[in-house]
Image 1 (cartoon, rainbow, N blue to C red):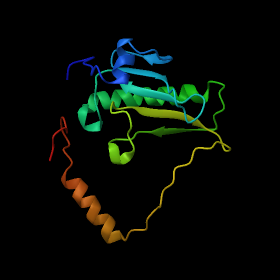
Image 2 (cartoon, one colour):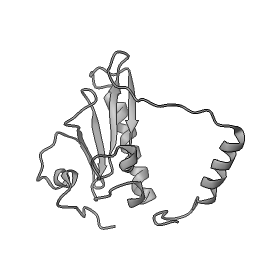
Image 3 (cartoon, rainbow, N blue to C red):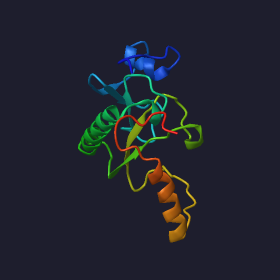
Image 4 (cartoon, one colour):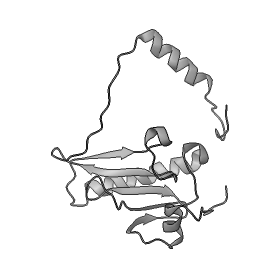
Length: 153
């Protein structure tokens, strides 16, 4: 993984390089955070790796851990910012079926209030213990507890 490798067609890579303007909030050698131009609420932040990565499978564990440390830092700052914020949502869509629209990994960190208009429509399911145990076994069988998980069939 080449640090700061970018996709010239990617808007977020354009922000990293400075070609595309953004209201930057946080930046270090690995990640960048900036204000979302289509926010769920005032204060909606995006946190991205500086290296182009379409999704979760495209970055290593160390970068993911660092990215979420920054997410935590920014969520705390958002709560203390003075913007309307009674709670915080952290949201990551990974893949087209998950409604990812910009294919550069990004985490939304946005403030919530009891009267905001954000809604997530979910049809929660009831599953039997046997079905849950079966699903858990399938996932457990694919855990790779060491090193990079990319490309694991």
